[in-house]
Length: 338
Image 1 (tube, rainbow, N blue to C red):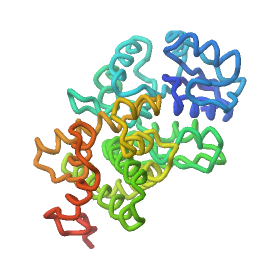
Image 2: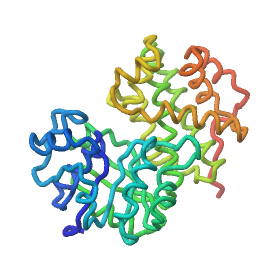
Image 3: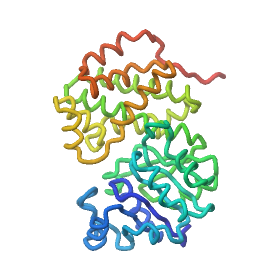
Image 4: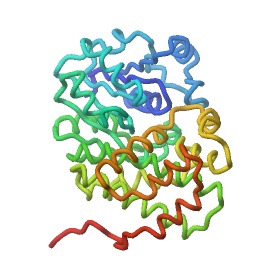
């Protein structure tokens, strides 16, 4: 893949971080930003001050607001677009992406009206069979700082996995593969809900025992919900499940965690969102998943309780009490049969 052009659509923190890493890895790469002023400033200054301040961009990275120029000749296209505008961007670029192009979503969200994951939107809008998803404990600031990190490329197409591994793999960024694209992508979206709850809990100075309960029951809820929808529950024991859940429930670098922390301090959802200043997918995902769980009759006391806190003025202590008094008594729901 060394001579193949790579394109990253979306100049947020993670899109910028992986585009810069790809450039450092020696690949020709273009980063497309919707904001033309920020694209020009980033190209001239060598820094995306709006989303990733303090990190110098590789001089080989081409930053542009011209979609056609960004996509011209690209063999692999990464989509790092917020879920709310994901479909509209796909529609914009559909005629610019040939069928043989590998397309990869990095977005951890769910479309509200349709309950579609981003890879499903790619398939619908691009008529594109060569689709992958990357997900894992990948905080953008740490990726940019070259902290040791691992991620998962998920696709049923082995050649897609191998191509993405070739593009992204570095001495500090390890890329594993998984054929359960749906499970990996769903895990990445669901953990954002519980990162908000963990941030709220941290703001209230709850004990470590309480955090242990919160994280493990969060994993149980995620797995239960995903398995009901057809994902492999074992996927949730990997990087995209427990790995990503742990990182986002424990780090102040997580936008969803910071939203939760601000809510725990008594701020409104609007105030918390404004304070974070970037898209936190967990807010919208909480509403979508809570409604879907009720529709399907899936027991998710944490997600339901968090919805009440964010949208109905409920309290976190009552949410935790609801979990403790939940009718479900089994610790582990899924077991490997020998």
